[in-house]
Length: 446
Image (cartoon, rainbow, N blue to C red; front, side):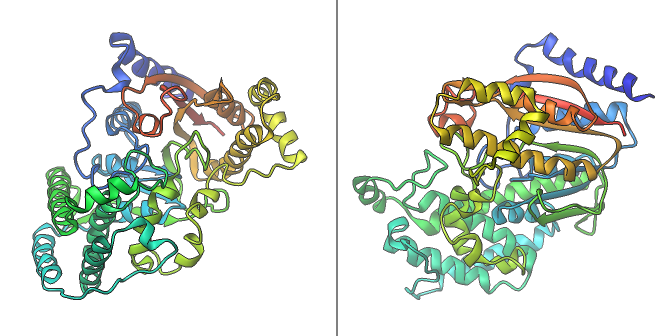
């Protein structure tokens, strides 16, 4: 089937879903996070059902597809949905916590042994009578009560005694979620904000770190077993290992080209370090202080990546707001929509304009690398939120389309997805900045 015919058919099949039900893509009331999707509350996670539907519709037309990639892999939603369909996967991210989550979700799946190791771990924690703190970082006592520091240290020491790397990684994820809940940072926002003194004092009476860790560990074991059972029933496992290739790598997409080619790219670009965006790095800062980086990647430097609470976000798209005139001119030449938007907000503070331009400058730097990783005829799926800056909606979908068309990419389908309860927006008081997402499908035709 030729590309044009395939594009038309895929567009028709996807559009027909929302024609029958205008709210189809919101998956309101039907967006459960099962099969390992709920191991950790990562910021602005993709809705698994959106990814699942799109993958299946593409495979209906292209049954020979065997590999998917996500250059901004995050918590691994695309990874898991690819595995559930027996596909190979490649993912990258600049957040070590994202890499850890994907490493755990990709196996191996030694479920019975993991249950035994979990019981052993709980015994070690309960038998630990030490009261010293296992980590040291700036403002440690600001973010954790004395009791929390003691009990989290018991958990950390006990995890470190586990010999199997795959099991330690699983336990680190449970510890990360425990830290998210038991620290003095508010869980009502992804940014690092301390609770009030009154709230912290009140929580001291009810926060039981060991009980919370145990509950999370047991919940994650159930999630993991469900993922294992699904993969096993589909015959995608061999002796507990996923049969197909999975490559998860800590990397900056702006600088890294994968040697592996992929048939499909499904991604949602991170929105950078901005008052109206998601601080993935800030959200990960406290958990990462407690996790052994060598269990994620021996080449990672904790001192480098956690030198400040904003370090990881500063490396993300739009994290560096310094814009050179030649950079601005270059990006304007490629996108008339971005040029028009900049004109709209030219009376706003300079930093607002720079934040928008820097995001698209960085995104533009990623696109050539991303396209190099895609096979000729390969399909890209971009899930985008058109947020507001300076009271004006940033047409991210139109700007990305401009940048892709400038690279001879065919943008052939656009779907609108209403966000019924986007945690990214509600929890950060951004309800008015992003209420819908646009799903763009594109094809690299040569």
